[in-house]
Image 1 (tube, rainbow, N blue to C red):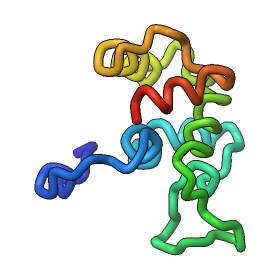
Image 2: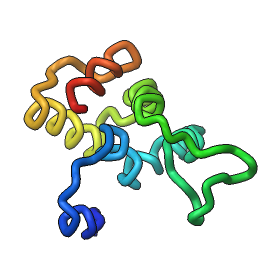
Image 3: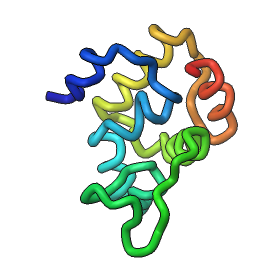
Image 4: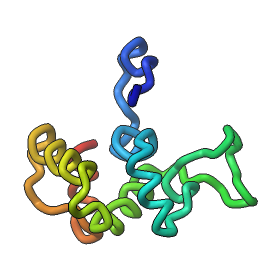
Amino acid sequence: GHTDPRWYALDEPFPDPAQLLIVPDHYIFRMLFSQGVRLEDLGVQTLDFPMLNGAPVETDGRAIWRRFAEHYYLFRGTPTRLWLDHVLEHLFGIEEPLNASTADRHYDTIA
């Protein structure tokens, strides 16, 4: 399905919020890619190559999270947005809307 079974077998913490919620979620990165955000900028490697068309893949979780937050408005009215808002509020206690100006606070709360 939608999760890598190794997550459960290894039972290790995620390194950062981007690796938990953005990089592995094809619903998120496909939506952003459809609106012009490069996969490399979302930390997504393509075809198991660390570079695509000479562009390095972003590895900074905070930078990936900020880029996601800048484009979060694109998810309005989608099931992904409903799910993410629910996760942010009910799992992490975050009631403040996610956007570019709140990205770092959300990141720090989740991390």
